[in-house]
Image (cartoon, rainbow, N blue to C red; front, side):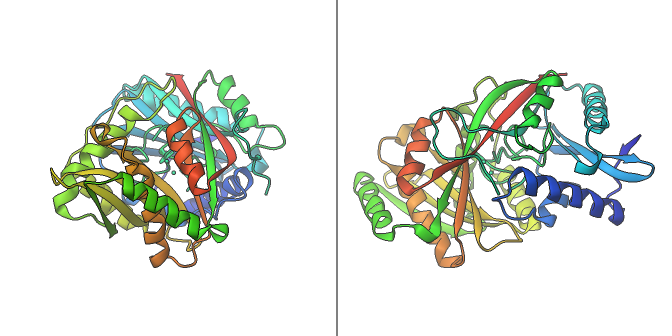
Amino acid sequence: MDIATIDRTDQPTLDALYRIAATVEATESPDLPPLCRRRFEAPLWHPMPGIDTRWSVARLDGVPVGWVRVNLHLLDNTENASIELAVDPAYRRRGVGRALFAHARRLLREAGCKRVVGSTVTPLPDGSGGATPDGRDGPVGATPGGPGGTTPDEPGASASGGPGGESSVGAVGVTPVGEFPGAAFAAALGARPALVDVRRRLDVTALDRDRLAALRAGARSAAAGYRTVRWHGHPQSEHLADLAYLEGRLLADAPLGDLEWEPERMDAERIQGMERALDARGVRRYSVAAVHGESGRLVAWSVLSLAANTTRHAWQQITIVDPAHRGHRLGLLCKAENLEHTLAYEPELSVVDTYNAAANTHMIAINEQLGFRPVAGSTEWQSTI
């Protein structure tokens, strides 16, 4: 077996790796839309600020049979890395996954990393309701289930691609068949389960618009002294500093379980770099935020995003409220208004997914008020390297 760094100009190899990733995704999470090609290749061409992605391909007799990519963090959490790994189902049980992980571990040790985090699809935790998928507050790849409820490389998906920043393309595991062998694979590699997440889904086609309007009205009445602002795509420059503060709070406020991950240091320049990377991926973003009337500061924020290859599926990304302004139902207000805001631009939208840490009872309660229901489990695994 040969394992080598991917040449981003080698289109036949990239085609093969995309086919592997798309097959894994379709089997692992058959209810999600097809894997977006632009998003899949984005780390090669349009990396997120502060991320150094190392991507390697495994070949048997010259044929690509699997790949692994690790994200090194250059601005914060510099001793941590995140990982994705996928093996062609036709070449499973031949040691490809173990060889790729061993290769990644050597790279990470050389880079001075001490820990690596990846995720696998797992059963829904007891008591969460719903049913396992049968055919991330982040599409394949926070993120960005960030840990505890975000999805990939979007606002709130861990800007630097940290834990949960990808809902994974077979990350640290293999496609679940019957049982969930990804978890067994991660455990066999010495990883330990550090955080349990639940993916919840909102069926927009069955949305009770009158109830949504009532929820929004009730939240607005509790938010006296605040006004909402909305935007599509880039935020106005006057809001960048406040958005950076909120984004930086995400990993401080969200339940992290046993993950050893520190809050990220955000500023306006980093937010702008993330926005440029998302533009290059073709990600469409819709935001509603709450502004405190007395101070003029933006103190709550919620984002919905759609990948370049879909008009029917969205991810609920970050929803966060400044701790000093909690208790005014700003989270519910921003989410409810943003759903209507997004539908005005995306009339074909029929499904919204989101990840939450199973322990994040407050955000789960808001999501369930809006109509989100559990559909799948996910576990984030942490390994000392």
